[in-house]
Length: 95
Image (cartoon, rainbow, N blue to C red):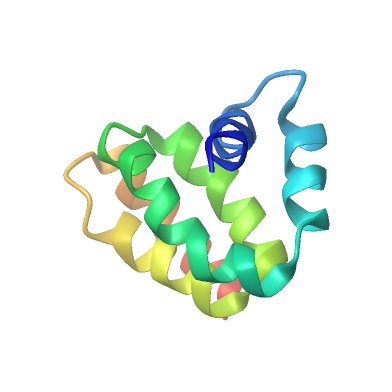
């Protein structure tokens, strides 16, 4: 799980390793990723800015629409107005 967690951290930040990390995550067994990603991302989302939300949304969108929708809904209810704005944009992409 530590490797998965580290890949998720890298995939949730915008830097030179984002795409590579995302690609590795997408190459893992899909069912396992879908069953584990929300719980593993939870600690990241506690302190996340709109940048991390955006990076995770892009990954979630590639994995599963329902997963992406749940993240968008969470962003809509965030205390940070920038994260809420990102959530509005996410919802527009999903419709």
